[in-house]
Image 1 (cartoon, rainbow, N blue to C red):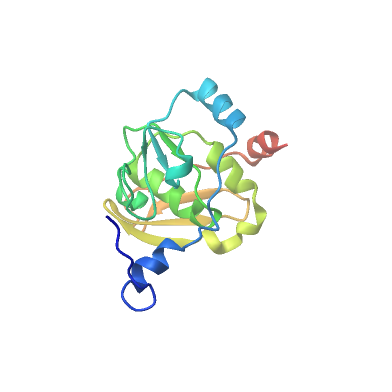
Image 2: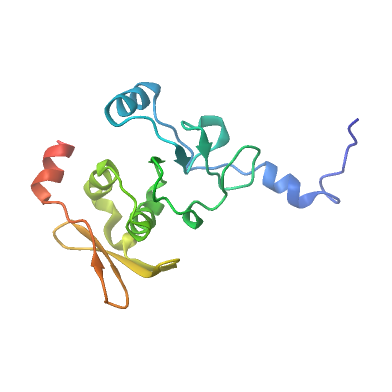
Amino acid sequence: MARWIHGATKNQEANALSRLDNPDDWTLLGEMVELLQASLGDWQVDHFVEASNQKAPAFNLRFESPGCQAVDVFSQDWRGWVNLLVPPIPLVGQTLAHLIECQAEWWPLLMAVSVAMVWLGTACEFTRPGPLGAFELARRPEWTFEAHRVDGRRLVGWRPPLAAVRSWWD
């Protein structure tokens, strides 16, 4: 049985959440999914996804939903999983830092795409706390990225030769 609740007075919060539109919601085309899986194998977890377009058995959402593994993708340890990561552009820097922080294995396709997007500029420069300490991701003038612990005790990073990024992107 269903009962109507007047949205304007009794159910404002749920009503507002049900009308949220996600401008960052997009999906990989079926042909691209097939190409990537043929080249790299199947992935186990699809992060940054909506329930309607998941490409893996487990998935993470922005809001709680039936079947989702987690709500906050950055609270998960990505190590040991085959992850599909197609973040919204504003989260590319945070995604790269989390990959390095978790010491997860990853395919540099994400990095090559993000490095080639010149307009990211200094928007990727940030410091964020995490389970392994505070990490900083900074863009260098030669369009390489590096991530390192803020306390300076250990340096980890990935710096592709610019020629390799250009040849992949062309």
